[in-house]
Image 1 (cartoon, helix red, strand yellow):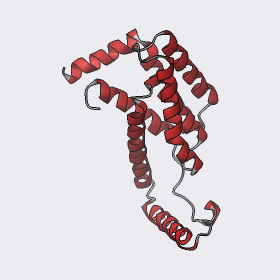
Image 2 (spheres, rainbow, N blue to C red; image 1 turned 120 degrees about the vertical axis):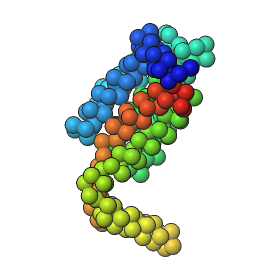
Image 3 (cartoon, one colour; image 1 turned 90 degrees about the vertical axis):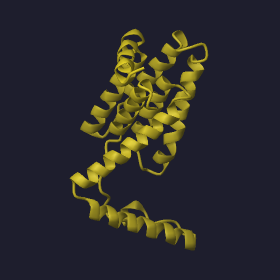
Image 4 (cartoon, rainbow, N blue to C red; image 1 turned 30 degrees about the horizontal axis):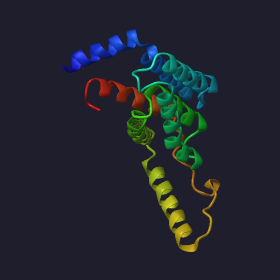
Length: 194
């Protein structure tokens, strides 16, 4: 099948089964809100996850892709992002947005979507550093973090508080990476590249 035919199939799927269209709309709304306020509303993530779970129970993708398939995707999205929240690398809204996306994608597709999200996040971070001319500050921050890790590993002491380290290169609205990565994955999967 050609890429054009696959894209037509994706458009047809968006019209026939609203699940993917709703996912795309929620991801774009979450990314937009994250860009504006660095927050993703709970109503968006909880409402989206609830819709995905109920819709999958009523209209499953297949005999094996019903409620538990969607619930498995939700849990997978949550568990794969939770360590980054615990390390204070990402916010709770980002974790909930990926869990919501997982409810739409299901257990089998969520890990690949998360990988695409990480790739998109890396590209956004590189773009942010380059466009804001923060390469020097990034190098100093990485050096300081490596030094803290070495000190912690060799002495067994607790690392310094984040306030003791130099100022970071800034925050990124990671909802953008979640939206871009997830949507890119779904489209790439549809046209046969993922």
